[in-house]
Length: 103
Image (cartoon, rainbow, N blue to C red; front, top):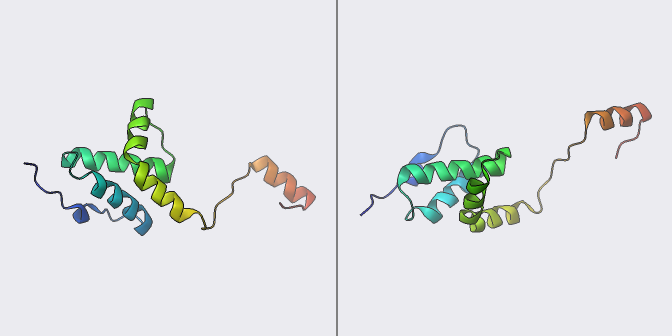
């Protein structure tokens, strides 16, 4: 029998509340499926993908996508009505500034 994982003790000091809640949800969903070390690793990979835009080998990305289906859908649904950042290229910004037109 696997020992129980104390998920709430795994929060790191640099995580925002939002990041922690997503990572915690992932670990809660899979705590009975993996040993603690693998669970922590998979959850960190998932949050790296979601929050930092990290990319991993294709097989890892597929595995995480499958494991994170429910958590990811719930997180994306919660973000629907929140302010979104829009990035533009530096050359476009410079052109808009020169023309004094902003989109």
